[in-house]
Figure 1 (cartoon, rainbow, N blue to C red):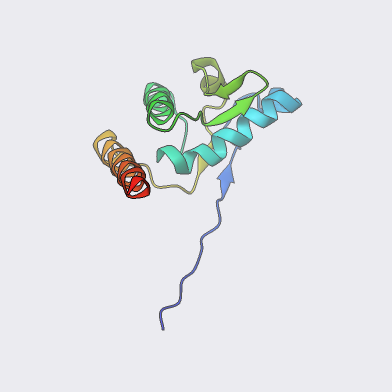
Figure 2 (cartoon, helix red, strand yellow; figure 1 turned 120 degrees about the vertical axis):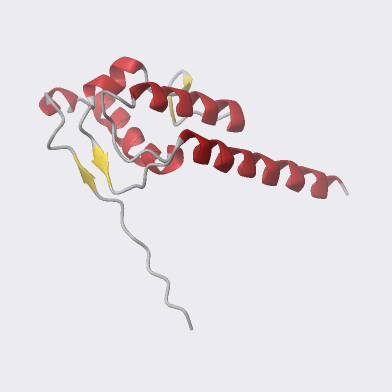
Length: 122
């Protein structure tokens, strides 16, 4: 019998500049969404160099699923560039993938969803 182990999501915010400014309820909620989003969009950290990739993947995720990375009183929520800049240095133990690998993952999920819809119609 194979033993399956689940790895916990670990995070490090020690390199986030002005972390104390992110402690309001609204900013804390955004940070929480971004922490969990690292698994959804396959980027384990927020850096100056990958902010545009975060924005691309968040918008792609919304286009593919109809959901944002989070939600707020206005509905779907995805981070703004400013939200990400405030959190440069956030790091989670999530493997970052290339855009090509992420696109393949999204297409596979879409394929699965479409096949499921077709099976339901039979």
